[in-house]
Image (cartoon, rainbow, N blue to C red; front, side, top):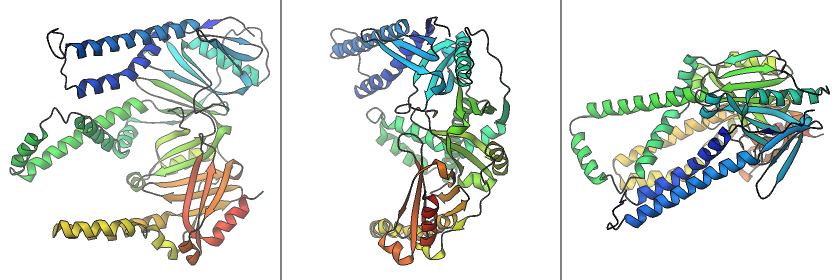
Length: 485
């Protein structure tokens, strides 16, 4: 095994500095906005010292972040020795970390703008013992050949092949099982709720300028404008929605461009991204559960999203272990692919549904907070407030919809739960992957002989729980007896 000392690419100093500077943008922007943009370099101005303080502190922090990035680059080294990946870093406090290659679960690759300009890659080393969802080691910027050398050394250690020196990487055949088309990207952007996120983001930004924008004058102008007619207002609203949709499509295109899932050496390789190209590696044996998610719009057109719960730290946000496997796919097509990946599981189970007598439990609690609102609206906003009564049948229909979805299926060593809040979720779990099982029953549920059941699988620090409410009491007892060793 080579003991050659390797360093990060010098561009890693710039990347670390930019990352730190990015965290300073929001605090500085808040200071600028709250000060009302009142800055001046005139020494006789009352805002002169505020300007000097802001730019002085900001410039000092910028220099510190740049120095910090350079120090991290200069002090960070890694090498291979005795079947381990070893790293050493730190200026005043020297730290070392040794990771046996057989403990490495996966290597995740990220290619940002700086990486792609110089043909580099960021490598995140994942093990089963990651803490707080963070990778065991992160190599900020190294050449792709160096990243391939780490991957080859890991494979050789796991297959117990000992060689004296790494020469080249042997290509392992891979098969693409899913690739998102432009049509799917457009459908994903339209049905993902991204439009609401864009509109709420614009509203949040606008609200920060309440001291600058004369809202009262704007409101008066709008009141006069309303008199022109509802047609113009409707046309402007439609234009705003179209712009929000276009922005949502652009964001989705950037995040999910060239989204491809491949299977290679018992691992799923997920690649995506336009500006920042990412590759997420997910060993099949670390998948704890699979969720098929159908929001109402996608369910109507037969589309689903498939996520997997991972026992390791492969989530995109670090702490998040919910990995999007198929962001958008026809349901029948997704079931065919899942059956090929996990042939031992039943992907078309027969569900036992919640009994009819349990239906009121799905909307009864809503009346507790609805009735005061309806009463206040009817009194203070009479007569238009009386329309709030229509919320009662709407919530009853929504509860009946949830009741119609709730169910479970037991099939050998597999438990499948189905439930919904808004989106219908079908949660597939194997018995050996379930960490805990819990049943709950209130006084009112006991009178109707129904119970709720929770099943938790390992995913992140607290796990992920599937819950089906108000099913037959003897069915819950059957599930608990099935789970007992």
